[in-house]
Length: 313
Ligand code: SER
Image (cartoon, rainbow, N blue to C red; front, side):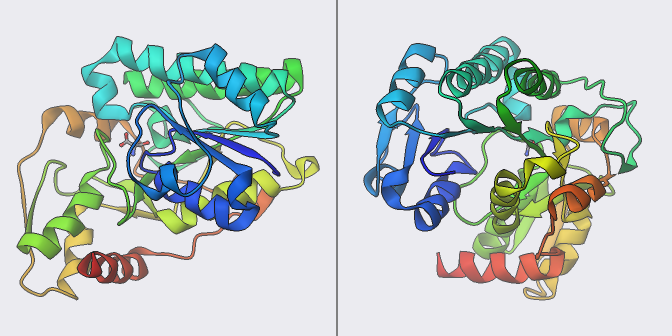
């Protein structure tokens, strides 16, 4: 990766990833794009262009003008929003992806886009979910993610595009909040713990989902993109995870720092239904074997860091 184009640079992942990539690869070598333009450092601190990813011509033009050799396509709607607006999700998630793949093909770029635990469905084994298994998601987001994995593999097989991806679990960060995801509770709970000392979870007790702290997620993408292609048996997309947790696990860990913290529940049937259709705990051994994936943060280490950073904020 020498010159990188990012889409969705003001989103949950992009807000941190853009800055990290600029640090590693040089400010001028990371071209951030987003449908919005804000006062954030992503916009003001380096090359930035406004881009709606459904505009394939504009994406191609930006990529050509900046002569990029890598496309990191992050722009997408998350699971709960996609369920509320399924047609919009299809148009943005799939339309954006095919434009980004076409751009990568035309300019012979390396390509990354995230898939998700949402690509799995109720027929998928719930625990130690294998890398290669049944994928019959029942959400629009999941349909988009499985289609996206297949499409990215297709561009690799048919056109030789160096496409790579991971199936991210819920991502937790103190920088940019997620919007409209099912795993968002695991971010909100920390904000509410600091602000109000209590949290009402829309995900029910005993509902396990995989999660990962953002620094591990960003390192995973870089490690995968820099990995020797000869070692990759899979491409789109690798299971990655750092922990499998339920709301009460996060609450117990927060109580070690804030003993008076309380958790109660007001379950949202839509997001609960989505969560129940996803695995409890996925197996990341293919990522470990093929490109050395590892996560530094478990629940205890992540909680300590989240609470410290949010207090400063
Ligand atoms: N965090 C995402 C969501 O909940 C999962 O990929 O939609």
